[in-house]
Image (cartoon, rainbow, N blue to C red; front, side):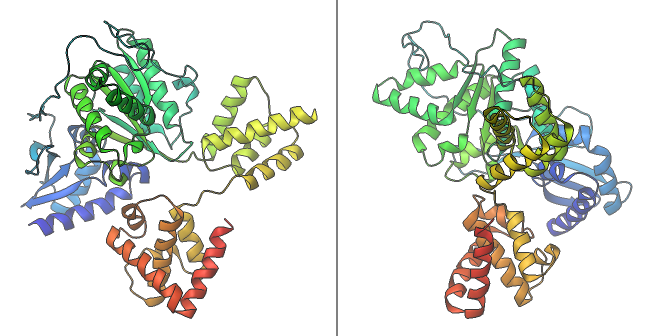
Length: 476
């Protein structure tokens, strides 16, 4: 019945995808797996209790329609929460929850606590030898929610952040992992949450630290033979914000100590907020047991802001700086600078600085002059979607054909070239590249990379394609 379950769920997903935004689909439905179909009862696997609660609260009507379309009016949906064990390779435990409002019974995994020294606790941020924990939060007071402009690209992450700030450690958003490309506001949002918690819950100890600084502190603690004090200090934090956790990649000892700190905080109802440049599924050289912890709460992505949001960001920046600009000028900047918030604000600062230096009024002509130079000097971000579009334009084929299942030689070669350049020119994982070119697996992408490397050197015609596309993409 497993194959039938997969087919039914596949059809349900097609219906669901047509009725919600792409971002919502990726966040709430892509991680779900069909488990079994027993007559008209479909069992699906969700990664956490939070997923179950969120689906029931926000998508229950859509799910009912989707399931009823496939299995009839008497159809039922059963959720199975599957969380991974930590210290061995035994099967994960499963909590089955019927689709109802009844509070489910839950199992809880408890990992062996890490032994730590008693007595004096050393604070790696201030002065060693503190008898009582006192630590500056390391938060930037300018990074507040009031300065974090909401839009379609960040609404989920911002809403989750507000929920965490209201009840730190008391929601299913634990940990809250915020991920996205450079300059989209991950650090700003993390600080906003911390600041709001300090305002609303002054009794709680809040600490922000970059993963790089955490790693260096750990190395110093080992050198100074006070590793246990380092661990004990972090286990006493109420709200821990770790920025850029991808920096832990390949650092086994740091991952191990953070794993135990994470467990202690989580099991004692403390809040963890993490940021990363990629989702847990795309992280490399991070231990599986730590990745499983990252998936316990909510992973919310920050995308590029759309035009309307970019305009709002610019207007807010101008308002806070006490500067007035005509709306057409603001909209022109928002149209030309699309990469990320950091560069958007950088373009505005460049314009204001140039006008001040030349003692000129900010006119539309000056704006075009300055922004054109700014855009030329900022290296254009190359994405998987952009590469696919360049390849499709070159071969004069629709993108739908490129990501289709067809095995026609010319389409296959175009597809392989798109995968090759996506691997070469972006930081995306093989899994993500494959997913964005027709839900292919990482092995297919790896095969494409090897094939393109070989054919570009042995096939004259293919070598011409390769060279021309390389030139086009290098000029982007």
